[in-house]
Length: 176
Image (cartoon, rainbow, N blue to C red; front, side, top):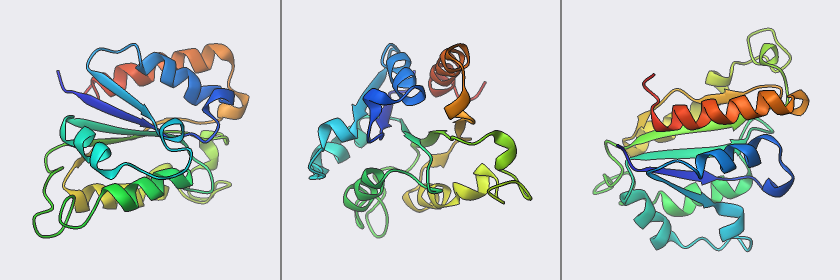
């Protein structure tokens, strides 16, 4: 079984419906380490050595966050800027993450139909997540198909509960 690191990056997780429920479900899974970055770094002072150590100890890295403004919450970008350093994660000698897996898990407010050519947002989720895929390429990880729930704003409790079960199953075994 692969050791999995889940980085939960939600600035208001306690009031979230989807990401909070996903966090509850993923924390129950064996072989999974959960790090809630906004709880760990409310001052945005990231412990780079600790984060790099955590990355080294795991085979699969999951970045879980609400997708808004076509990107991630700002703390995830800061985490990437600080932790994925030149000479450590990429560039000469920067092969520490080579061979690991990267999985993006997101919730969107809008319905799935909004994320396609000609839809409200004009682009697919795959297109909008290209920067994460490019980062994966740069740091030598294997980019896995993202896990997404669309329409989180209007999702029922039953839909959210089912998405949490599906999310946990996918994180544990993305090949199915």
